[in-house]
Amino acid sequence: MDAKTQQQYAETFHGLHKTGDPLVLFNAWDVATARAIAKTSPAIATSSGAVASALGYADGENAPLDMVEGLVSRMTAVVSVPVSIDLEAGYGDTPDAAANSATRILRAGAIGINIEDGLSGGRRQLVSPELHAAKIRAVRDAAQKLDVRLFINARTDPFLLKFGSPDECLNEAARRAKVYADAGADGIFVPGLTDLALIEKLVQLTPLPVNIMVTQGVPEIPDLARVGVRRVSLGPWPMLATMRVVGQAAAVAASKQYGAFLQLNS
Image 1 (spheres, rainbow, N blue to C red):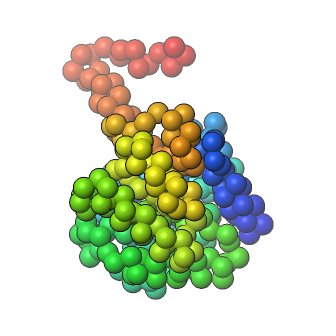
Image 2: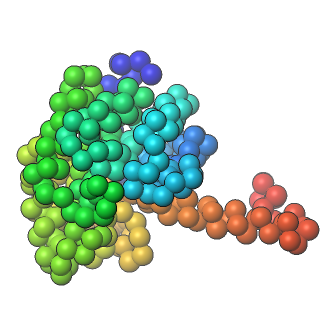
């Protein structure tokens, strides 16, 4: 991808985060799914859990960065829409490591990343907001050196890691959102937050575009749009649903019948 196209994709991606009309991302996990999604979606994002599973690894920075980088290169080579990558915690516990990882992903053609504060040393735990902010600043500096307006979606995990009561989780997410915004983040991603009233309160407490992940109990997209959510991610659920269908289709081996899955035009 040439630099001008990447810069244009970055600007386009920023503009897709609209109040009242959120960007809905059906997360990809390989080149084939990226191609399929790009036919109808204005942008593509990956799910780290889905990508890791497709590559034969557990989630949590277990898929080698070389393999992720290669996947990004193949995706950006075959689709004509912006591509954002779930970079987990930046593939390292230091700002320099995160900046290096982001640089590699940018050079592969991506224009956005997720970077999370709930993984450190291979363990699921909240890191200090100051450390995560330092990573965000380092990533921003790396992107500026490449002249790309990288969309940094700062993920914070108080709800996933059960920091406390729902109100305590919300207050911690809002506190971290402010720190991350000051460090240069472009969005705040709060997986595990499903209560519409709390979502609306978070939107009111942060100037950053709020990203909600679809999971059981999440309000419908029109309701999320009404309270100001600007990005909705389906996360690993598309892959999990696809694997269920594959498992059902694979029953041809036992039934000795092709079944409905071969009726491609139905």
